[in-house]
Length: 401
Image (cartoon, rainbow, N blue to C red; front, top):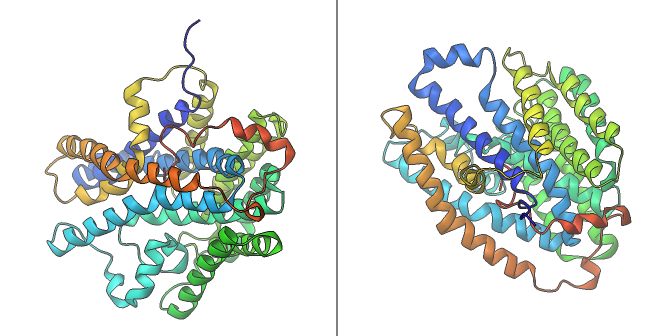
């Protein structure tokens, strides 16, 4: 009998090209701006990459939560997956900025240091009106909002309604986007940003440690805060922000359909709603082709999910978080585009081996510790097949691993 391919290798086959696309987008604007302008007015390659990431997150993150059935283990897994590399990248960015090899956002120096730390370490900076130390961290804020909403839905046993959530978010994106073209939480609203950031941290901590109704209340509060931050705090505007969230829940709907929880036509309707309502969210000719082709690429890889993918391609997916987070740090230090990638890929491999992989192993050991009975709840009974997911893919997640 021929061996079967790894269960979720197709997700890594998506992550690698997505990470390289984002890196290429920023590097090309740095090294070959005139030529890249011709490409960018036809398709925004960076947007294509991040929307592939968002759909991958939507597919795998709720399944991971339901597999664990434990908010403590879920949040611990996210922390061990994201924070070690994030802290290393932030430290490198500050060192490079001190040496003149990396440009920090000029607004960082005008905000209170504790707020800057709070925003960037919680990865909520984009939604709190706080400048990011590394610009590409903006996507992590939407990932965090998605985690919060997914955790809230899980605790009230509504996780299976992902298609309806995707359609609702996509439909509401248009009127809310017209009403709120920019963030409400912005500028120097330091106290409001700090209170919102602390409130999210408190909701996560209580939902991870408490049980029963307290846990449910905390998780639902966290979900509502996540949604409110996207609507009111999105620097890119509510239309684009809600489109991002809707795309992630559309990815979840695909997973539900694959597991037989919902009909395929419902999942397809969710994806179609996101594309229809999100196509005009940005006044940029390259935006709509990017999100449509991202959905098509995701769908194509999904259709081939039972096939073998080249090992080099899946390995790029494994190191995709390092590729994504570190690539801006090299832009000023590389003399040309080919050398940029010749340095970036080995560096990402190194940081994955030395930082990400050990932290993930530690996180798995920590999460394996038994949780109290009040802290464990399985998802809806129809979701029990999520237990077949023996991990979050070979690489562990999407933009965030």
